[in-house]
Image (cartoon, rainbow, N blue to C red; front, side, top):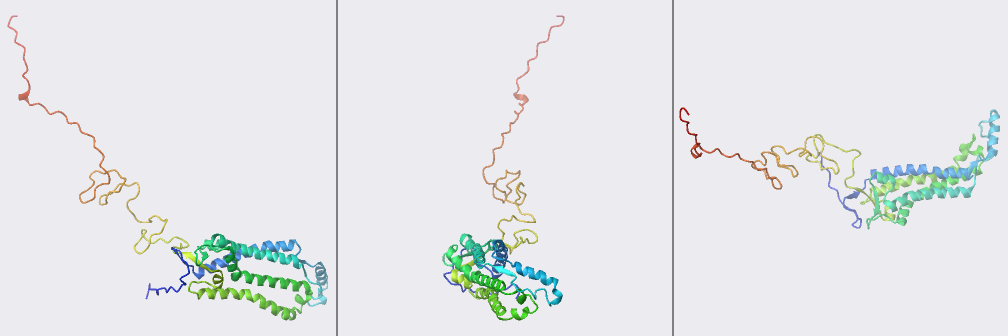
Length: 336
């Protein structure tokens, strides 16, 4: 049936606090914010990488470079340009390298856990109207709970990835270049080290799938990271669309709720500011009385009518019979 949806069944834990005007956030918005935050944190990794290079934690081995230069000049005697390079290509100082790995993990921790504890959302979660709060109090997570959520969400996998990176660099720093860049490198890379690295590096790729499934199958959409930290992820009920949606004609139309902050659009609505009342509409407060208004059948204007100026009537004419007689002078005798 068109337009019909099955009624939602609320199986949430009664301890979950969902403030008024909020609802459980959808997996689409949460996944989108997680991807965007991951891209930003990936760019922040440039800081420890540059620091590791500048401080000499990782660098090129000059003896291997000299052998590569010589091997290029005599490459016609060998099958590949790295076949005669017996020195490791990179040199690694493990102490500074571990320091910069710890710096990267600290940046990651402060970005996520600091954002959740301070404002309840990372920058991209704010952009998508997502808020992470404590499930029982409705407040922002404490720094400890936020740190636990980060560890389960990606801190542990980040540590595994960092361990895999250190393991690779340490192996490269101890292995002749021709054994992993030479003609017969496939046998070495597919051996013990290749299998171990593949196993370790695959764990960070599988863990997000586990978190997604545990979130999607939970009644309150709380994955393992939310259950460990005691958190719940919410969004506002009136989540705005990417752009305002206006129906044809005027707004609001029947069947559409009014949008907060938008004036009526399109066809006429009445009264318009600055226009006097028109016949057939009741008077609006704040407008002066109009001639011939109020009309019969309409309520009177709010407030008393202003006083009208008194009209001066001219005096009425006096009838002739009431006027006094006019005296005429006596006639002079003739010859006088």
